[in-house]
Length: 189
Image (cartoon, rainbow, N blue to C red; front, side):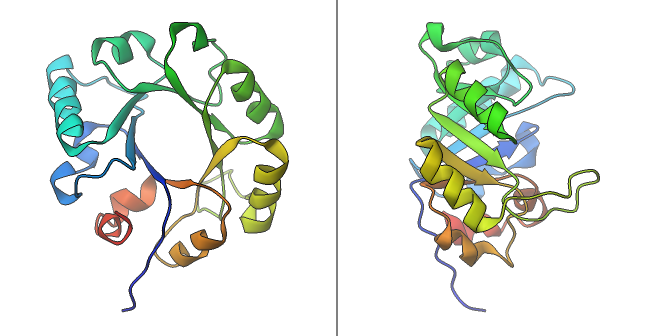
């Protein structure tokens, strides 16, 4: 087992509920942002408030997906706008992170005022109906030509982790690999 060092300025972690990540396993780190993206049953405000407080103690930034009222209630650090979300929130003064899969969505997120855009899929994934992916070279070309802060997502796993050093991005975003192998967080953070 060799040591893996991935040096980025920001690490974004998608979670679907507060149970999908154990914050106690991750060291305090100002580079970590957690994006709460629950598209099914919303957890109780009490649970979310406790989770939010733990994030503050750990110095993690906390974003709520597509729900301005919840973000305001929890005093989240910002709002995450899914690729399908077309609403304009920049007038509220929130830090905005967007998600995109195409050039059109990239520029929509820029028009919405997103400071950071998570661009998906960097590597090949096993998801049904999602066979296309960018690869490192195409991602880097888009990053260079777009003049936006793009963060790669998709297909990132322990086998291709070192390839992230070739990606011209200040960060990376994880979703399913963090659920499958929580120990990956020890290698990154």
